[in-house]
Every structure is written in C-alpha cells, then in structure tokens.
Amino acid sequence: MPAALPSSPLLWPVRTALSGACLRLVREYLRRISGLSRHSSSRFHDTEPASAPVVQRAEQRGRYGPAAGNSHHGGPMRGDAVRNRDRILAIAKSDFTQRGINVSLESIAARAGVGIGTLYRRFPTRDDLVVACYEPAIEAIAQYAEDALADPDPWQSFAEYLHRICAMQAVDKGLRDVFRTTFSTATTLEAARARTKASFHELARRAQAAHALREDFVVEDIELLLVANASVLDVAPPDSTGPASVRFVALMLEAFRADRAHPLPAPPQGHLLRPVE
Image (cartoon, rainbow, N blue to C red; front, side):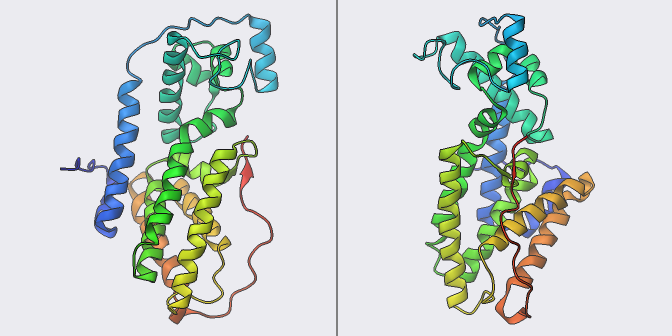
C-alpha cells in the first residue's frame, strides 16, 4: 500500500483536486525527499583536505579540481570520497528542496561535514551540483510525458500531465528554480528537457486535432505556465500555496480549451529561462 501523504496544509488541495495518478507521483517524490533526509542524518568526515589558497581560488572561479565525480587522478573514487559525495548530494537536495537552488554552497559543505574544497572537487560548479540533484527528476518528467501519450483521451492526457508537473513544483522549491533555469553544460539534463518538449508537442497536437485545445496554443505556452506557477508558489502564504497553484492551473486549462478561445497576442520571443547563478 502506498505511503499516506503527509498532513501538511500544502498538500490538502493536491489531495482533493488531483487524480490518483498525480497523488502517486507526489507520494513518490516525497518518499525520495524523505529518504535523502534520513540518509543525511549520519555523519561522514572530510578526508580530502585542500589548502586554503586553493579553496579561495576555487571560490573565486566557481570550480575546484577535476570534473565532478572523479578522483584526483581521474580514476575511480575511494570509499570515503564516495561517502562524502553522497552526503553532499543528500544535504544539497534537502536544502534545495526547502530553500531553492541558490543556497550557499559553503553552508551545504558545512552541514555535510566537509570542507568547501571537497565540495568543489566533487562538483566544480553550482550547475554540476544542481544537475546531479535534479537530473533524475527531469528524466522522470520526460518519461511521464512519453507515458501520457498512451492515454487515448487527448484532452485528459494533456491536462493530467500539466497537473502532475505543477504538483511536483508545489513540494520542491529547487525544482521550481530548475524549471526557470537553463544549464548550458548539462547535456543529459537538457537532452531530457528536449525529450519532454517533443512529447508534450505531440500531446498538444493530439488535443488540437481533437478540437479540445485551442488552435493557437504553442509549446512555449507550457514554459509560460510553469514559470508563472513557480512564481505563484513562491509568493503565496505557506497555508495557501497548494490551493493557489491548483486554482491557477485550473484557470490556465480553462483558457487553453478550444471552446473558450478568443484571439491571443503573439507569444514572447526567445526563452524565459535564465542561466543558473
């Protein structure tokens, strides 16, 4: 039997407004977050000291040592290095989930019980750390888009997919930031984004062919929706976050329906995503 949802007020509207499939997705996501938090409770010690001048240069450049995940000489990591990396990831994911991806890397290193040099050795830039934490989620979202195409109801599959993504945003501040950010060097993450876009394009095409989705809807409108939903979640009071997001998505879906359509202005040029800071 799936684990019960927490009784947080944030999830009350999610419980009532979304389908069983969406609730299962949120449960899976919360279990993953909970597992990371439990993992981060054990202590590891920093066994990878770096001299102060090197660390200072790392902070100035935003990188330290070889590529993320490699040892000093490019070979497999030692056991203590693996444990340090896992602990950094656990702490970073917990902090990103609660506070967003611009959390101080120094505070993450301190909470993980390692030096800042060790963090930069494993993850040379903030991008590397964020991508390591969120690449699995973006891959899963790409798979959800592909799975949605198996639903024979064009409008239901389109609407359900939007509800799923926005429900994930509601419980993870870092994921909201990732949706609003572009990662120029994260080829696998950006490839997953491209898969998502291609599958969503097909979801939209099917809904338009069924005369359920307005004809002037473009794929870039999903970017507008996700950026706007993230902003709604950011500014809403804690006890109103869930209801505000659910209502906003419902309003947008009503606006997307073909039988509600009135002429729209042209979509914005370029992307709304910003580079990671």
